[in-house]
Each structure stands twice: as structure tokens, then as C-alpha cells.
Image (cartoon, rainbow, N blue to C red; front, side, top):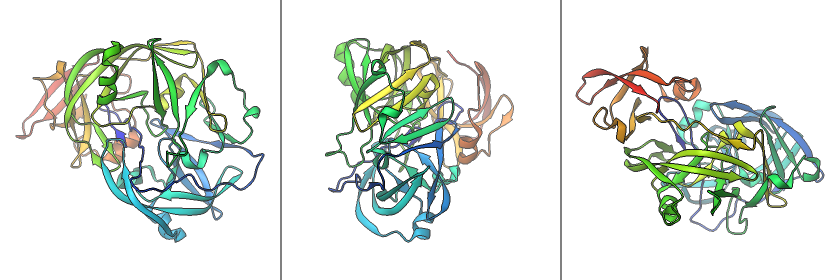
Length: 391
């Protein structure tokens, strides 16, 4: 569900599918004509909200790419009854078995939702966030949801006319609710003014644009990207663990359009077997509204034209076996560093005993740096220093 980019924590999102025929699109708000404002805390691109269950406050992750989920602790506390067993697939494509339960009542702001199914798949590293669960797309499917980025506010209502919406800024929002068991939002974007793509909008992903190998191959005939670099390794940690090492590609895309907003010279890496999507980095550039009721996605950009930073480091780390290690090496880093080498320090700052929770909580280790000296430990125990540049 999450991926860690070079020396900083970038957790990517999760999406679940079910091999058994069950819909998580059950239950809903206990009243009509509702409007509520729910503050959120943004930490390293992750959105956290406070919800109320049986009068008690709980911290939940707000993740539109996932269904509602509960922790083992909350499961035991509420003594929830299992309603289904099945298979779940995370963002890396890995599959595991799990179960679903039903929340009798959960309150978001001033609105109470009843009879909401929740999955019990809850990886250990969720504990790093100190959360009791996840607010996912299946609880939002009957509402219009506006994410006001500057105010860190989520508005949830069944009256979209109460929101300030501009049709020029909208694109279709698709959930395929009859076929999709969790109603995760899919949106239409335009690639280089010639290719229409349907991608998930996933607030569990703190990146901007997430591509898969399959999507890259499908787009090859349209000549809509350039391969900027090739690499090998693994960076994405899903619900079920670290993805297998594989070839990866760094793609440069001239521009995309989301509604009336344009993003130039985008760079994204591919994931083998991954699920394409757009993450919370989009909120750096404006506000988002998910109008599930009318099937519209609105992006109100601060500027019509945008140029995200597309510079890359020669390698990317990940976290495995209790250590921060080199996970992926791009072509310009080959011969200088190998996948699996431990990252001991950056500019003299000791990282040898860094935990995954510290990495997630501490934010980007390189910050706004454009160059750094990294201390690496090879598999034979030898240490060396390597100067790296962001290019």
C-alpha cells in the first residue's frame, strides 16, 4: 500500500478487490439533507480524521482508494461480527485472504452512517500512524465530498448544490458500483491531448501519478511518453508486503489535463502488476470534489498551468528486514550502488537504526536538497560514501 521514495517516506495507496461475490456498498447515512465539515491532518501526504464510534473518538486514515477498515484492537473493542471471508488484492497485485465485518454506527462530523461493512485487513505498519481504522470509498459513495486543501477540511454532503462547483473544472467520475464492491473513484484525464485515461483518485497515495507496466504497454502505440530511464528493484510496500524486484521504467510525459488544469513534463515510474492512480500530491495544486451522486470529479486548480518537479535521484530506497536499504537503482546509478545495500547515513545523519515508523513520521529525509552524501553498507559489510545529485 505504500512506497518509499529516495530517502523520504512516500506511502502509496491501497486498493482492494474481492474474489468472492460480496459488495461492501451497503449501509449509508442515517439522515438526508446533511452537510458536515470534517477537519483533517496532513502528515507526509497522508490524511487523518477523527471519527466517533459509540461516543468515543478514533483516529482514522482517509483513503478513497480503499474500503472502510478496522484495526484488530477496534474489532475486539466493538466485538464486531464477521459477515464475509474472501481474498483481497493490494496495490502491488499481491493477494491474501481476509474478512469483513459490519459497523452498526460511525459518525463523521455531524453525520451518522449505519450498517457500513469494513474489512479487517490491517498491516502491522498501520500502527505507525496510531490509527484505529480507515475511512474508505464505500462509506462515501452516496455523498459529494469536497477536499479543501488550504483549510485542511473535508466537506461531506448529499446536497452538491451547497458546494461551489464549476462545470469547466469537471471530468467524469466512475465507480461502477454494481460491479465494484467498494466504489473507489475512477476519473478521466487527458494525456497529451490525444489519449483519454481512466485512473483511480487515491488519497491513500501521497504521490502524484502512479503507472503500471500494463498501462505503459497499452500507451506505447500512441507514442505518448518517453522512457527516461530503466531500473531494477523494488520500492512498493503493499498491505501484504514488499513487492518482488523487477524491471522498472521512468517515463516522461509531455503533459496531462485534469479538467481545465494542465501539468507539464510529468515523470513517473512504473510498477509491475500495480494499479494506476493519482494521489494526494494533486491537492498541492488545488481543491478536489468527488461528486459520487452525479458522477463528477472537480479539480479547482490554483493555476491553469503547472510544472511539478520532475528531477530524480539515481536510486530509491525502501524498508526491508528492519533496515533502510537501496530498493531501486536507475541507469545513472548502476555501477555505483546495488539493490539491497543498507543506507547508513545521509550528510552525516545516522540512519543505521532508523525504524519504519520513524521514517513515516519524520518526513522526507532529504527535504529540499539537490545533492547529498550517502553512506552505504554493502552486503559484505564494507562501508563507503557516495555523493548523489538530483537531476
